[in-house]
Image 1 (cartoon, helix red, strand yellow):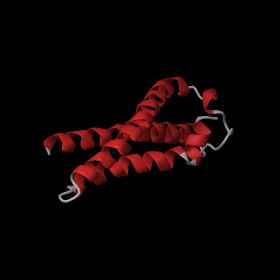
Image 2 (tube, one colour):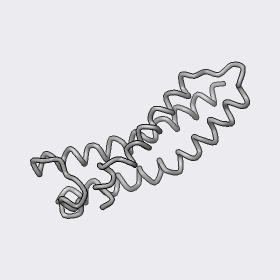
Image 3 (cartoon, rainbow, N blue to C red):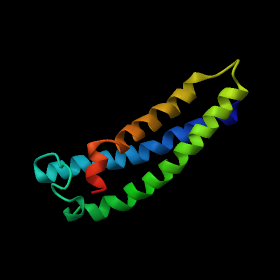
Image 4 (cartoon, one colour):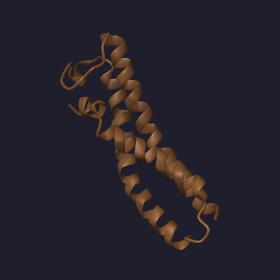
Length: 115
Protein backbone atom coordinates (compact mmCIF):
# COMPACT_ATOMS: atom_id res chain seq x y z
CA UNK A 1 0.00 0.00 0.00
CA UNK A 2 2.88 2.38 0.72
CA UNK A 3 4.20 2.15 -2.85
CA UNK A 4 0.84 3.38 -4.19
CA UNK A 5 1.00 6.34 -1.84
CA UNK A 6 4.50 7.28 -3.03
CA UNK A 7 3.51 6.93 -6.69
CA UNK A 8 0.41 9.09 -6.30
CA UNK A 9 2.22 11.77 -4.30
CA UNK A 10 4.98 11.88 -6.93
CA UNK A 11 2.47 12.07 -9.79
CA UNK A 12 0.49 14.68 -7.85
CA UNK A 13 3.52 16.89 -7.27
CA UNK A 14 4.76 17.00 -10.88
CA UNK A 15 1.92 19.22 -12.21
CA UNK A 16 2.62 21.92 -9.63
CA UNK A 17 5.97 22.74 -11.22
CA UNK A 18 4.15 23.57 -14.46
CA UNK A 19 1.34 25.45 -12.69
CA UNK A 20 3.62 27.60 -10.56
CA UNK A 21 6.09 28.40 -13.33
CA UNK A 22 3.44 29.47 -15.85
CA UNK A 23 1.39 31.48 -13.35
CA UNK A 24 4.54 33.17 -12.03
CA UNK A 25 5.57 34.15 -15.56
CA UNK A 26 2.09 35.47 -16.31
CA UNK A 27 1.93 37.66 -13.20
CA UNK A 28 5.52 38.81 -13.65
CA UNK A 29 4.61 39.88 -17.19
CA UNK A 30 1.56 41.70 -15.79
CA UNK A 31 3.74 43.54 -13.30
CA UNK A 32 6.11 44.68 -16.06
CA UNK A 33 3.39 45.64 -18.56
CA UNK A 34 0.91 47.15 -16.15
CA UNK A 35 -1.95 45.08 -17.59
CA UNK A 36 -2.70 41.39 -17.98
CA UNK A 37 -1.29 40.08 -21.23
CA UNK A 38 -3.60 38.42 -23.71
CA UNK A 39 -3.25 36.61 -26.99
CA UNK A 40 -0.60 38.33 -29.10
CA UNK A 41 -0.69 41.47 -26.97
CA UNK A 42 2.26 41.41 -26.42
CA UNK A 43 3.98 38.39 -27.80
CA UNK A 44 5.57 36.66 -24.78
CA UNK A 45 8.83 36.23 -26.68
CA UNK A 46 9.19 40.01 -26.81
CA UNK A 47 9.46 40.23 -23.01
CA UNK A 48 12.96 40.29 -21.56
CA UNK A 49 11.96 37.78 -18.87
CA UNK A 50 10.87 35.17 -21.43
CA UNK A 51 14.34 33.64 -21.72
CA UNK A 52 14.43 33.14 -17.94
CA UNK A 53 11.06 31.41 -17.67
CA UNK A 54 10.63 29.55 -20.96
CA UNK A 55 13.09 26.68 -20.38
CA UNK A 56 11.49 25.82 -17.06
CA UNK A 57 7.91 26.19 -18.33
CA UNK A 58 8.60 24.12 -21.43
CA UNK A 59 10.41 21.39 -19.49
CA UNK A 60 7.80 21.22 -16.74
CA UNK A 61 5.00 21.14 -19.31
CA UNK A 62 6.63 18.25 -21.16
CA UNK A 63 7.19 16.28 -17.98
CA UNK A 64 3.65 16.97 -16.78
CA UNK A 65 2.15 16.02 -20.16
CA UNK A 66 3.67 12.54 -20.05
CA UNK A 67 3.06 12.11 -16.33
CA UNK A 68 -0.62 12.93 -16.89
CA UNK A 69 -1.06 9.80 -19.01
CA UNK A 70 0.95 7.76 -16.52
CA UNK A 71 -1.30 9.12 -13.75
CA UNK A 72 -4.45 8.11 -15.67
CA UNK A 73 -3.10 4.60 -16.22
CA UNK A 74 -1.91 4.20 -12.62
CA UNK A 75 -5.22 5.51 -11.25
CA UNK A 76 -7.23 3.05 -13.31
CA UNK A 77 -5.00 0.17 -12.23
CA UNK A 78 -5.18 1.26 -8.58
CA UNK A 79 -8.97 1.56 -8.66
CA UNK A 80 -9.32 -1.90 -10.23
CA UNK A 81 -6.90 -3.62 -7.86
CA UNK A 82 -8.07 -1.92 -4.67
CA UNK A 83 -11.76 -1.41 -5.42
CA UNK A 84 -12.79 -2.64 -1.96
CA UNK A 85 -10.38 -0.51 0.08
CA UNK A 86 -9.50 2.63 -1.86
CA UNK A 87 -7.57 5.31 -0.01
CA UNK A 88 -8.98 8.46 -1.59
CA UNK A 89 -6.61 10.92 0.08
CA UNK A 90 -3.64 10.47 -2.21
CA UNK A 91 -5.81 9.77 -5.27
CA UNK A 92 -7.52 13.13 -4.78
CA UNK A 93 -4.19 14.86 -4.14
CA UNK A 94 -2.91 13.72 -7.53
CA UNK A 95 -6.26 14.49 -9.15
CA UNK A 96 -6.25 18.13 -8.00
CA UNK A 97 -2.83 18.97 -9.46
CA UNK A 98 -3.55 17.26 -12.76
CA UNK A 99 -6.97 18.86 -13.18
CA UNK A 100 -5.62 22.34 -12.42
CA UNK A 101 -2.88 21.78 -15.01
CA UNK A 102 -5.40 20.56 -17.54
CA UNK A 103 -7.60 23.61 -16.94
CA UNK A 104 -4.54 25.83 -17.28
CA UNK A 105 -3.61 24.26 -20.62
CA UNK A 106 -7.02 25.20 -22.03
CA UNK A 107 -6.97 28.70 -20.52
CA UNK A 108 -6.18 32.09 -22.03
CA UNK A 109 -2.93 32.16 -20.05
CA UNK A 110 -1.47 29.14 -21.84
CA UNK A 111 -2.91 30.36 -25.15
CA UNK A 112 -0.98 33.61 -24.66
CA UNK A 113 2.18 31.75 -23.65
CA UNK A 114 2.27 29.45 -26.69
CA UNK A 115 1.48 32.38 -28.97
